[in-house]
Figure 1 (cartoon, rainbow, N blue to C red):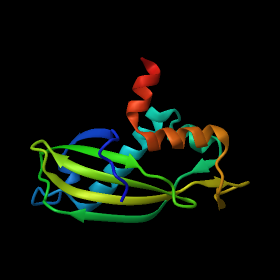
Figure 2: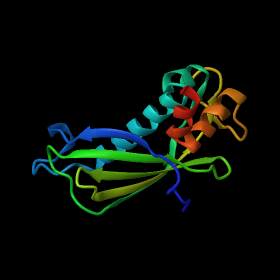
Figure 3: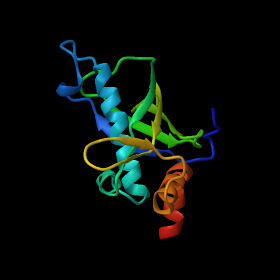
Figure 4: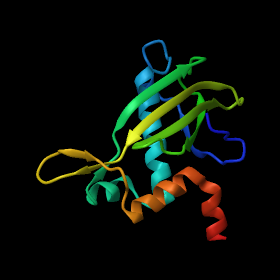
Length: 156
């Protein structure tokens, strides 16, 4: 895996609510997947384009690979920081690595997600994998890979 020690993560803070849990108050595995998507969509927006704008330009980024490693259960009421990094693309895949961290800095889960950028063509959804993103999207994807600290420097 890429060395992340010198890169700031994209961060989303969440609280485990009743709708995220099973009847025992343990966070349901599908909630992790929803939070991963929320984290990516928020980072994309902060990097310069909302997912809605991406879609209106005729692009989508579907998940083509997903692996979640669970180390410790999350329970109703827990505060969690989801730290995510957009990694260097591998061909047409745009990989992400994320950590779910409880308030005591305990990493309770890690996830690897592979996305592909697709162009929707004509009527309906007939995706075509994009091997070379257009300039506007390419710039945003590179900002995602650099992390949020680059944006703070530019806006200072």
